[in-house]
Image (tube, rainbow over all chains, first blue to last red; front, side, top):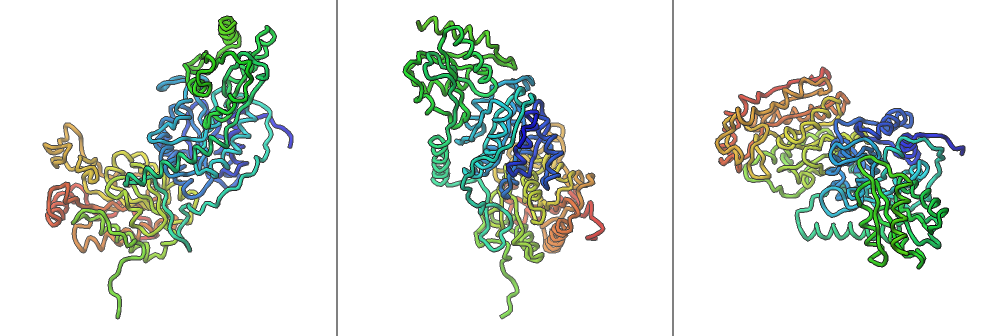
Length: 352
Length: 248
């Protein structure tokens, strides 16, 4: 199929529809408004339902109801809106319902700004709401990758009966890039025989996260943890770029990784053997990638659009074997290649 | 031998956890009888809320979802939009619906969401131990209004039926009570009518049921029924506030 030029936020909507998503519940917030707008236009054409909720809180609870009723369903928002959705996300994770949640991150805290940021990394990867749960989290770096991962996200959500979050930022949401829509690799998906569709001819189904007996709730928690462990063992995804002989490995995800890729090339032109480690899943965090790095690595530099969040997972993965440095810009400022290069040179000067 | 009385098939055999004298048992039964009489048990999906009726999914013998505090109308919206032919209902108390869930109930009604809401109003938070509700009467003592609800400090109780009746999407809005037998029979008819409104696709339907809480009101069950009749009905008058022509 020919590639078409699409804006990131609209490509998100189309990818979801191609993946069989027929229900979308959302609430306006910048910089993701093109997602609900696209869904409002497209979903009726394919027999689906777009509904603008009265709040993010309501939207995520509509997602809970629709997911519990067995539908492929999505919602999207941006940071302050995602905070409002956390209550529902916790219930969805606790009740083991599949859905896809898009967060086009903007600068925070509070109302923050509307420029690109990555400051919701902790919120996305460590649970986000109350209780001990995890989301499956993708961090695409291009519009094409966003499309590919969203198309797969619905299968992953159904496979694990777990919410999948896809992180973007204003840059990815607003930029136009050529995309094509390709069928993801098929997974064996279990039937949704747990859904509340009306109990005709079967035992009734209950969607619930309440468990008043502590022993049972603990058991449920261990069951969830087993699922997360399975994700850690089988679903880690990453990209290594020019790491074969690297002495300095830069770690970055999403938009920042694109900038860092050009930084790697420029550093190599200037005689510094740099490489890029780009997590594609940030939960599960790709710690297996670190085992593949050569012995030449002397130091790490994590670059993020926040004040240092993923760097904690990088430090855990490196486990003290090499120094892990950090460079970040925040509040909606996108780091420039020049300032990352300066930081890299400072580190490598020290190492030599 | 002729069976003259039995448990509705829409109720499970599970013994309820409700306090002695609580009217939740009556209201559960009325909802279940209505589901049985309309023959919709195998396409009914109920939504339990947070409060005393949080375990309603154990008692209604149909598919159920348990919702976060106040969010039942949003959850029901999600279910109904996916399966428009299912009969979807929520069962909510006054803390859940009239306080934390005010946005969800108002907008579900405004959208004319084709769901049925059973709203149990006993003017107090029961499950958490008797705190002031948005429906607590002025002067009524609760654990968080120990001197009696003072209007100048925390305002006036909310009349949900009157409020929702201003919305065009709210097709059927009625307030009933279960303080005595004639009213229980009227409540049953209202619940039947509310489900019929949904079946006919006429819009949003809500039955507000004036109820009691002997435990947290600090009364015997009989005193509580009397108190409800003498104090609540004056502020919360019974009757239909909106009724579509099709079910009149």
